[in-house]
Amino acid sequence: MVSVGHAEPPDIVDRLLWRDAQTMLGRHATPDHDGGCVWCGRPWPCPPRRLAERADAASRRPWEPSARHASLSDLS
Image (tube, rainbow, N blue to C red; front, side):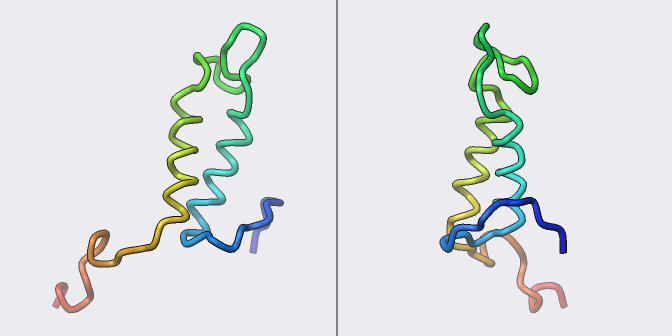
């Protein structure tokens, strides 16, 4: 298993999404002295930062299998 060095909070439902969000949040962490993202240079907060914030929030929401995937019985 690969470790990314983030201590996972207990309220995380989707661990992979949370880890990816933490990586993106770390890269697009702060604005530079001109008001652009230190990673991509876009105006702060940049679109990747906002997407990572949404992914972080989504990783904590309860998973609803009926809303995201067809059940196995629907496939037969």
